[in-house]
Each structure stands twice: as C-alpha cells, then as structure tokens.
Length: 204
Image (cartoon, rainbow, N blue to C red; front, side):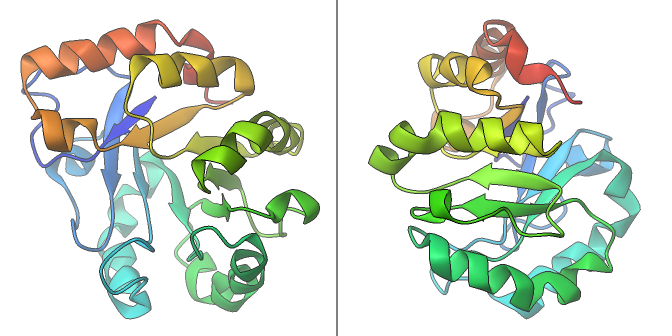
C-alpha cells in the first residue's frame, strides 16, 4: 500500500484501493481520510521546527473518528539517532496511547542493537540511506516476527517499491505526488508500482 502526500481526492482520480493517505500536523485531516482511505500519520520530525507535540496531539484528536482506517501514527523520533528515538518513545507513549491509534516506533540509525519498545504495534523504517540498505531486511523481518505492521518512508520509485515487498514491508510513503502532481496519469503510475509489489499489500 502506498500512502500518498496529497490534498487531491484519490477517489476522483480513480486511484486503486492500494493508494492511501499520509498526513502530518502541517497537513491536517485530508479529504481522502474522510472518504475512508487507509492512512498513516507522521509526527513531522523533519519539519522546520521539529516535532511540535501540542500541534501533533491536536491533529490526533481531530482524527479520532477515523481510527478504523488508521495503519499507524509515529511516536516522535530523532532522525538518524536510534538511541535518542528509543529513549523518546517511552517519554511520549502515555500522551499518545489514549487515542487508540496503532503506535509506530521509528527505526533510526543504531536501533539494530536495541529492542523494539513495548507499546509499539508498528514500525516505520526511517534512517539514513546507507544504514537502511544495510539493516532494512533484518529489522523488518524482526518486526514481522513480532506481529507488527511494517512501513517504510521515502519511497518514490517503482524500483524501490518492488524491492521492499520481499523484505516484509506492508506499506510505504513518499513525496512523489507532491512533486509530480496528482493526476490520473500519475495515479496510474502509482497503481502500477503497487501491482508489481504484491507482497507489499498483505495487511496481516
């Protein structure tokens, strides 16, 4: 499943069922979420001011009515720093767990030596590109064995989408539509990516 960062209606563009919505505090509750698409929510650690927890919590409050189609929300993380992310998880867990959404632990550089924290029901593969190439298979397999949903960020090509299926990924997101534009042509291309990545689509 590909979670697109777009404000355009995926239904109106004839997007397949394997195209959902990715959102974050600066984006808000998108129409595609209201229309029943699967969705994920990122805490926006890469935003200009980093994670703004109160703004994030406000968004989650507004998303409560759409919990049935939520794949995950990310617990605030530290890009490129697995240890800091691991320690941050417990700090924010109690503020987030009451919303009832599946909580995703963000995998960052160095987390390969750490356990997946209790309270996580999903993992989100972040990290730097060289680190991801080395550890993606190991970490996603570990998460599968633990019964967790597996998501991978920064996926913007058919090649990368198809490569992730055998690595036990179940959903991905990227900024492809943000830069290429949301049109029927670009949605057909995304549908093609997903059809070529059948293992990616199994939501266990």
